[in-house]
Image (cartoon, rainbow, N blue to C red; front, side, top):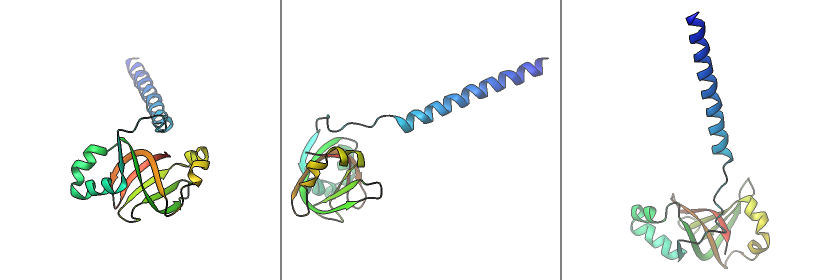
Length: 144
């Protein structure tokens, strides 16, 4: 009798744990992302300034800008379309410059503003800095 009761309790605990795990996973994958178009930029700077700060001291620049809303402007050196229809604007230098990624939903939402950004013109984007790989990554960008 007690072994059946123990098994039943263990099964209920397992079932509740499984439901909690699935609910957590669902929340993480479906939580809303930051709407940077409504956020005020913490820092507004030129792409050359941002590049210089990262080249001088990458650790302190990462600590300063990581996960912050920044507005960066500079000359557009290239524009690439990714497989998911996002756009990547490379500012100042294609390899060691600033990469501003505009998500596909924001490409559709801001299509008229983005059409004015062509290679060789000055572009200004607000996004979230994620640090430096080969270039400085700014994601979830919106045109300014």
